[in-house]
Image 1 (cartoon, helix red, strand yellow):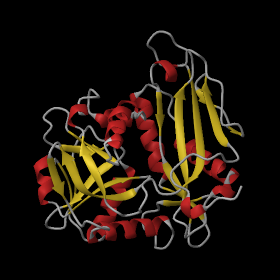
Image 2: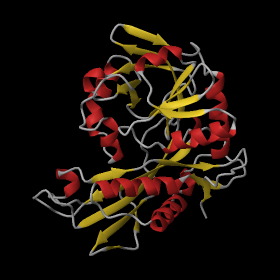
Image 3: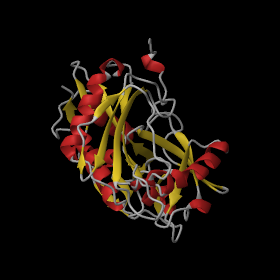
Image 4: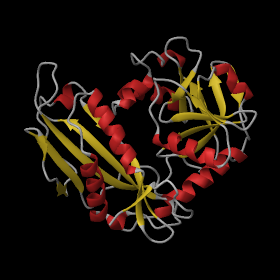
Length: 337
């Protein structure tokens, strides 16, 4: 199959296979590579009835040297196990998780996009409660799957800025904020506000804290970061937001670049004082946000076109590590062998 690597977009495409493991009687099996993108699920599986599931997302890059490297997979393994503990699911040993990534990427090596195309191999680990239960109980059987698919940019236009819409009426959609739902690996509660946002012409939805509607939490698909008037990297301190691996990595890079990094509550009104604002996550890395709409209130942030200088510097430093264009002092690149 011939692919236009430079124009993939962010969509699922069939590849050679996925990898699947089953947990039963207290242990995981050896895992198998499956060609068919389907598998049977019991009609009483807890993932179907009670949402007992969690997913992760990471990327694999073909680097400048030609090596194929997963980016920070151990952090995804740890975050998935955090979700597993919260949802009473069997944890996936970190060694098994890393080996599964290695096996499934090797089996689909020809789908890792070439260096220089801007595309990557997206890796989606998925943990499901597949044992049957009718009462509200945890399953006695679990399935761990990793699918891979080649992808391009999540948003078209690269580092071109986008508009965001504040979704006040949905800030109470989840009992502990939107991030509580996403930490468990389920975006179900965010689908309706996300659709409303898109129908109104906004690529990104922004959520405030669910109690006072005063503090910024996160965007619908990713974390919120900003550059304040002094050039500091600022991101919300909130128990409602997803613990973003990308945000964590960008904070590390920001410190290396000599920037002050602040994790603290951010009042909505403070938006008017920021130099730059962005949405950050695995799929986008950094997407600048230059307009934030809340009812009739429109807040303009950063340049009208392109990316501000601070975000550009962060993006370049972070992605140069992903693509193997710079040294990796943190051990974030894990070579597939």
